Length: 315
Image 1 (cartoon, one colour):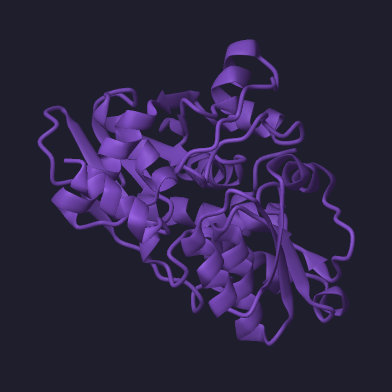
Image 2 (image 1 turned 180 degrees about the vertical axis):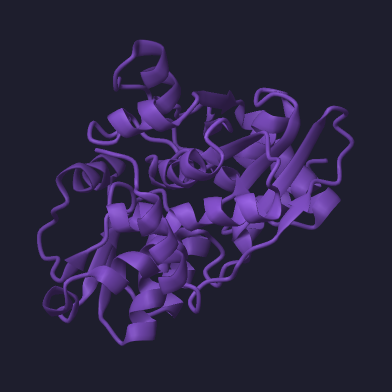
């Protein structure tokens, strides 16, 4: 798989402009010495996550006859919301297959948007990601990771970062399957080719770090936690060549550091971030992305209220 051509990212930016929020880039209100941490607040999108970008672009370029039969996806929650939100906008039926650890906040949002939800085990869900098939589903399938139109939509975040912070020194992106990080990295490779883009993972599920260490996709243990928007048991084989080419490596945070980052974002910037969205901030606060102006993608804010309350009350 090749990087997304810059012309496709520019086209996606124009195509989805009316459906998305051009999210702000704000400084983290923490004194970190030579590290200036900036937050790209994708949690402010209408669905509370960046996935609306890729879903909007993929559905805009989908084959009309297939799209007319409806749309479906396999997602832990945020891509499902992106597809469901756009399906409702277009008056299309939508069904989503979610893993059994998907949080209540994301499932409730899907129900509000009128999506038909099927829950399966994580292993069954991961097989859908690999095979792109599931019995009973019909219409256009929007792959949450390796759909090139999805990655082009995600890449529009890279355009906005460079517009707002031309002298950015590094970008840290949550790593779920690589669609977000590789989309952004495709844009930056054209605009600021010397700026590294890092994957951000949590220690309980870090397949990208394992792949970089081994030089090839490798199986890792996956332990479900509240950081549900990222992590898997393996880097997708069709994504690894692109990940290896575009990303500077993977930064891994402990679960405690991610928890602390969720708290820091809420207390210091009044930003509600889910675990995946706080992981880049945890890595940057640890100094893993280096010094200078570090942009962290706060990918989403769809965290269960009870879990957020627990994190904040823990001090």
